[in-house]
Image (cartoon, rainbow, N blue to C red; front, side):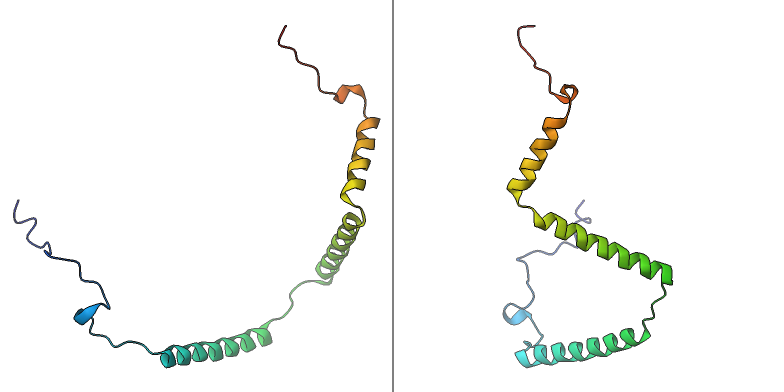
Length: 112
């Protein structure tokens, strides 16, 4: 049983970067700034390459379909934005008045 616990480390936890335990040097702001600039330059180069390589592979019918979908969506948005909440509630109440009694909620009583 003692052999199973032979590899156990005894003592307090040793955390990285605290006290004399850490052997690495501290990073300065210049290093971080330099790395950030390098990444930014690399990302702009990658973006330029991807934008040049992009070719629209949709058929004319697909492009027309997307254009019509966008147009219909704009019309729906304008239609919804044209009425206030109060007007929508009034229209809904008028619609409910036109429905038959079949849609009414039946009364429920505890006495039955």
